[in-house]
Image 1 (tube, chains in turn brown, red):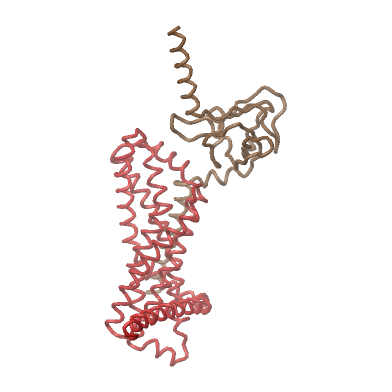
Image 2: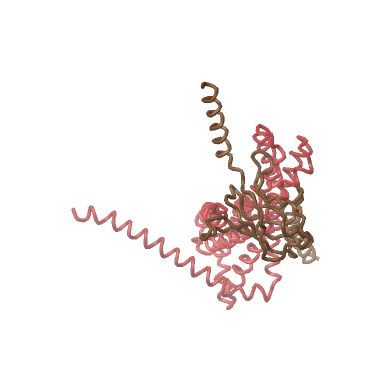
Length: 158
Length: 264
């Protein structure tokens, strides 16, 4: 009897611990998503500037997450950044689709946005998006704004 | 004159040799525990009994502390985040701090003071009352019979306790943020899910708690086994277990965090 009670408690303890891990994995973490993206294909895109894009950032089309950034490398031949993405097999994009690096909100994380094109053929494993648009660098934008303001001011004086 | 310089140097030398000798003894002890843990698996009932003492009996303190740590994180996180208009990020804050750091570390600290000290006192007293010598006399290996099962029991309990601590803590944060303050429930969970990565955050947390489990139980068992067989010796060994294993947890946590989350 004593032995059975002990076994019961240890059983409850171990089951509780495993349940806690499962809750952490499925409810708190993104394990359910991690297990789902096994059927994916890999495509590349080259950018002049990726801003603050990081590996595992989402790839979105029309606001829906369709894949994730796998890794980012620097092409030393052409001095551009190459972003390698894994896109879910369920989602196919025309070959002339364009990708751009966007920011969610004013200070949010950066993600890759896919704008579908009109080609009849779809992009295949290992192919590259031809049309890309780099990340908007806030400092450059402010710099341009200040220059144009200064130019306006000197024009007005003349 | 020469003696005036030599005496303190001799004392320093003796202390260093003593410390190194003790470290060597501890490492040999640890290797012996690992080598002779066959008994623990052949007679798994011994390990189950130790899981009961180390794990099940620590449940109350782990769950209550986890709940309160999560609730405090929820309150404090909300307090600061709402200034920046992103109160929904409180879920991310609670979940990331618990799964990465607080879950494994606080659970291990509680485990060291709740179960580690008990292990040291038990083995120290067994030695003081000559039960260990009696076992050796009967050709029963005390390391295989007494120390091994406690080591494996503690090692199995630790990650489970840390996982429960984190899960209950997230629930505590949910209670405060969503139920009490009224943060949007959908945003709370979805921001948390998009920020917490299974491999990077949860698995790394489990790895941390396994490492802490090894450190705490090894220190506790060694201190008990090495304790002078007197009342004073056992009490000092128990204190040393709590102090050494807490410091070991914090030091190891820094090293593991530096290895796992380098800037990524």
